Image (cartoon, rainbow, N blue to C red; front, top):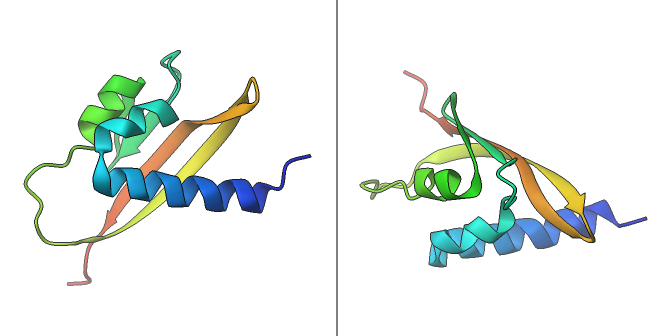
Length: 93
């Protein structure tokens, strides 16, 4: 059985490094069978190309707090993102 803590740690390090340096490179983490899903601020997107396009997030220069949860799925010995839920955390008014 795989060590889920080690898998999660490796995934998070790779994901956010790639997010910062080459967002188009994230496509490899989402299923090429177009089963991967992203919920971004309550708006759903499906398929790796559409997800990577949504993650480009152009125009935001100011860092914002967020929360993100991933559901990873094992397929043929490798892992991919089946479901990704992203929410911005807005300051209290």
